[in-house]
Structure formats: C-alpha cells, structure tokens
Length: 125
Image (cartoon, rainbow, N blue to C red; front, side):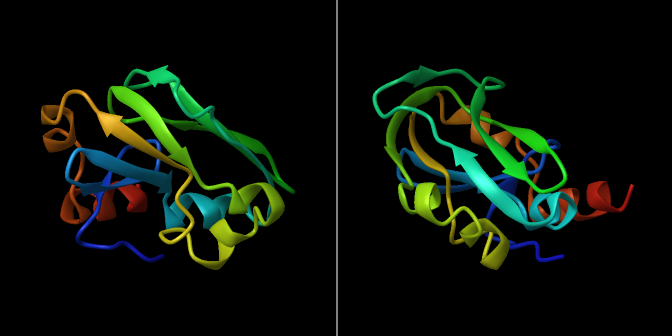
C-alpha cells in the first residue's frame, strides 16, 4: 500500500492534492487494491456544484461498485477524461489518476482531513 505524505486523505479512502484553491481528488491506493481491477469510472459533470460528503463519482471493479465522495465544498472545474477510456489507470497509479478537480469554496475543510500519519493506521484497522 502506497501512502503519499504530501496528500490529505478521507476515511472513505479518497485522496486530495491542493494546488492553490484547486483540489485534485482521486481514489487512494488502499481502495484500488481492495477493489481489484477497475473497469469503469462514472465521472461528474464540469460546472456542477458539490458539497463535502456528496458522491463525486462511481468506480466499478470486477468485485464491486464504490462511490467516491467529495471531501470539500466547491465547483467541479475539470474531470480526468482519460479514465473514461482507461479506467484501469487508477490501478496502475492511483495518485496520478485523479478523478476530478474541484475549486474549493471552504479551504478550512482541507485542514480537517487526515494527513498520511493519521491515514496509515486507519488503513490497518
């Protein structure tokens, strides 16, 4: 399991990389390992508003379908269209295969997310 120290994480196994007020959001390595081979990603719509805790998209694998939750409030400003043709990119490198970029409206929400040190033991439970 790969946990990157520069990222923030959720207890639902999403990761977030902050660049200014833009959050790159994806599925953590832990989650993709447990899902197995990912065969489909249902991407959100650019321009949609989204709130923390709402479903950002759905990832389907040979084992199950799993909701991906948005950890912050904001507006979807970009989606990773490569995942429509190559959903397995998440299995290849979960941290390069972001799902969406969200322009954050409440940056303090990022502070309440798990850092790598807090996320790692959570994955051992």
